[in-house]
Amino acid sequence: MNGRTRILLLLPFLLFVGLLVLMAGNLGKSPTAVIKSQMIGKPVGAFDLAGMDGAPGLSSANLAEGKPVLVNLFASWCLPCAVEAPQLEKLKAAGVVLHGIAVRDTPEDMRGFLNRHGNPFDRIGDDKGGRMLLNFGASGVPETYVVDGKGVIRYQHLGEIRPEDVAVIVRELEKAA
Amino acid sequence: MRKFLVALLLLSGQPVLAEPPPPPDVALADPGLEAKATALMHELRCLTCQNQSIAESNAGQAQAMRAEVRELVAAGKTPAEVRAFFVDRYGNWVSFVPPARTDTMLLWAAPVLLLLVGGVLVSSRIRR
Image (cartoon, rainbow over all chains, first blue to last red; front, side):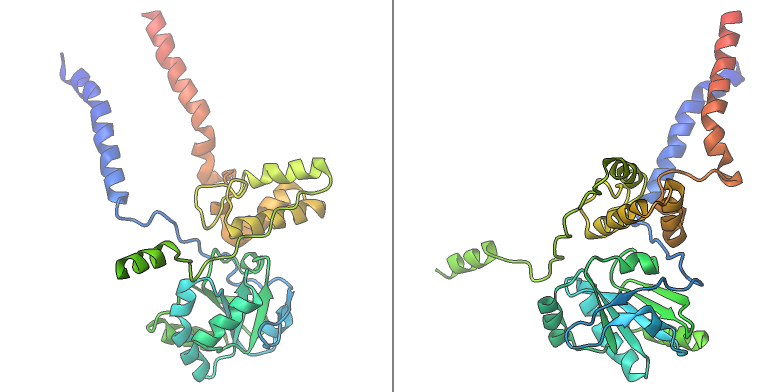
């Protein structure tokens, strides 16, 4: 057997080892990819939602009133949404205009959620069918968007807002102004 | 007695937080359009239950996407336009059909290339 055929015979084994290394490298990674919204830099599609729990409703016109606003997609059934409640209060205290979109929720559940965790929202839109996620390019709740004064999405925050994210979001709001 | 009560409490446990089930799917009245919509649903990836198509998923988000597909198809949108609607929002990731672009050329050409390689191998064997 000459050297060349030996290498050829070894090739499948080497390919197999290469495959193993590739797979082992992916073991620690999260199995779900983070799907970033492709809507950043694009205007929010037109919508008009009824209000919830006494709060006025939300329409796309409310997102184009000249001042950047924060839109929080949340739900009473979503645990991380409760975790980010103190951070939303902090943003509210910083003078941020904050609108909520309640995804696939019921009035009773929403009332309970707001009683438990506070209501920092200026407006709450009732998104019964959960279609608003598509309007923002969101893949779940919670997600938070900075929308500039013209109704164009400027920034997306995926997942719950942690204490260290508050400053980042405030900065993004200032950038959008 | 206390153990029994604890066990009873655990067994009767109700989820405090549970996503309400999505509304049932309403098929389009026109069977032709419904078939068109269903075919599209098999090509679109569910966002919350990744690697499942929205046709197969019972997630609330997938249901919302199916409703959107039906609405777009009923409004007379072509399959390409419906696909573009989702790709505009979520990127190529959302579609199971890879786009034909220069950077995906190798993917599309792979079957032909592999067939050629196989053909060359076979013909060299036969000739020998």
